[in-house]
Length: 162
Image (tube, rainbow, N blue to C red):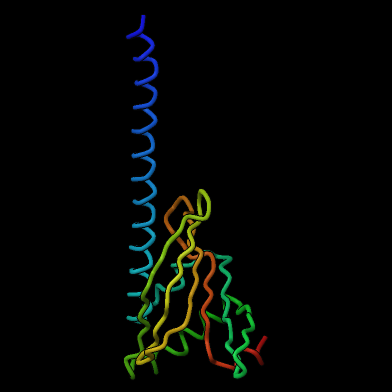
């Protein structure tokens, strides 16, 4: 009888351990998938791909957090259609000068069952200081998409065009 009690205690404990290991591996795979998706998005941005808008959900929110001259910040929401229009307008000039964005210190955390928060430091062109970026990336069931993008910027014109 003593052995039977041990079996009833050991077997469930082992099952819980295996479940925890599999859950950790599943989460790690999700994070790696988000990083792979983000690397693909970055590549599309830096190659001026026409597919960049396809990385976003239809109702994506775009924010520019303007760092004012006095050091304070103000968040401005940019309509998605304007974001796409600006991307298309800027492609020719950006391509001519070889404009690229580099992202470092990329960190991904799972927010809930469908959403991930990605934070990073963005270094446009020859910038050595960098600015903060945050993305919410969601699993749509048909793949990953960007649900929101927030970039810190020193470009003051965003404040005048709300």
